[in-house]
Length: 302
Image 1 (cartoon, rainbow, N blue to C red):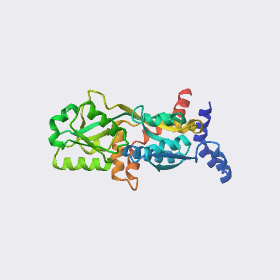
Image 2 (cartoon, rainbow, N blue to C red; image 1 turned 180 degrees about the vertical axis):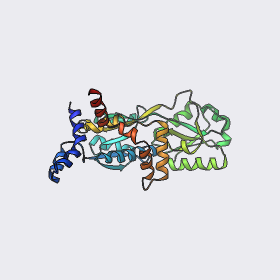
Image 3 (tube, one colour; image 1 turned 135 degrees about the vertical axis):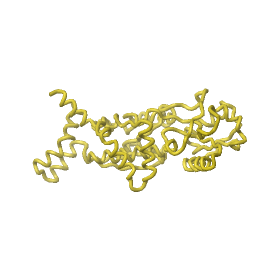
Image 4 (cartoon, rainbow, N blue to C red; image 1 turned 30 degrees about the horizontal axis):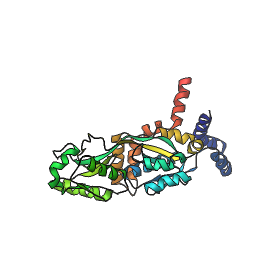
């Protein structure tokens, strides 16, 4: 019943102000009783999928009257800040596996809200033009790769699992640490000259729209599968029941998220790419809000 009342308040406040000609003070006091106009801080790391999800959420939420602040920081700081209540949301926590160490430390001070992407995975990735298909095949091609796997930061989960894969499959390879930009640079160079390359990779990621790639099969299941989970500071769901219902529906399929990332990649500064994607998917996005669900229920009850 509380959720219903809040959602109806969210729906009819704007009409009320127009009809009654309320003063600015009355409007501010009425808005303060609901969620409209309240500030929400979204924390995100500098990962392309996280940037895309945070940018989309900000645009959609601001359309409904929320004030949204995006704050970029490294992954450890995100969990620590959520645990301290110094931030509200993180839209792409890789769970239950990649971020399990952070959840052991901070999980009791956060709360899960929903799933933004269901089929997250990591592994070793090569161009589709290469003949190999499994991680075990790599040892037959050491000379083509200079016995090197192009990795990202050593603190990342995919780096650590790649080290496990090297041991598990007894690969005659070493992993070279770097970052996302150096990994993408190596991919671009390889494709430009149709050369061999093996990188640590994951989905969702914009590189799947830029290049024809494939995961090497992992028969030993060294690389775990995950979901991108939306988590919040403790108590968020009680304060923002309408927004929580929206976020529980805020789930993108692989093609949708990859296309969003590609759009943002081309228009990072002016957000034109996100606006274009938002406009093309507005009917779907509107269906995520509880107001639409209440309207449908009211019509069905008549």
